Amino acid sequence: MQTELNKVIVALQEFYAQETFLLERDLGERTLTHRLAVYVERQFSGWQVDCNYDRLGERTLRLPHGSVISTDDHLGKSIYPDIVVHQRDIPNNLLAIELRKQSNHQSIEHDQHKLEALTDPNVWFAYWIGVLVTLGRYGVSASEVYVGGAIDRPASIWFGERLRVTGLTERRSQH
Image (cartoon, helix red, strand yellow):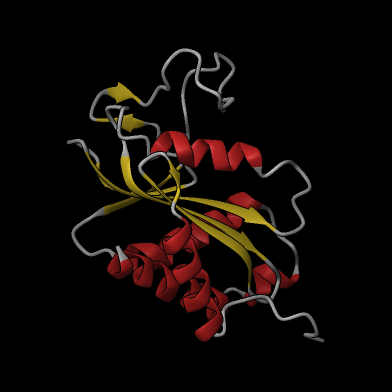
């Protein structure tokens, strides 16, 4: 798992090095998600990387009835992860990334529940790893790692420390 998380860190390093224009102008999460996906794709050779992808082959990703998470469509059934690393035609789902801007004032619980559901081994399309990243203007302000349908505290601590060591955590005085 650390190999995959290190690839996410490299993608975040490239993102912050190249996308200051977008970050300084406070562009929307969808724009930032797309640009981060470009850098994630460079790290995961042999995998497909997609944004807001809700399929596996011909099947739509749907949560079980009564799931705790609210979904993103008007029928309340489909789920749209921000960025996924997967194989489109077979159930081989490696990584789901949920991205938030630090300035997003909506509850983080929606993203947390989404990653719990996406990594739940009891759903037929489960992702092995889920990562929640909160982007500040100058660095990552928060992160969590999900495995097996729950937050993985040791992996989250390791990931946060790697972000700090590589200089990717939000620094307060940046002007």
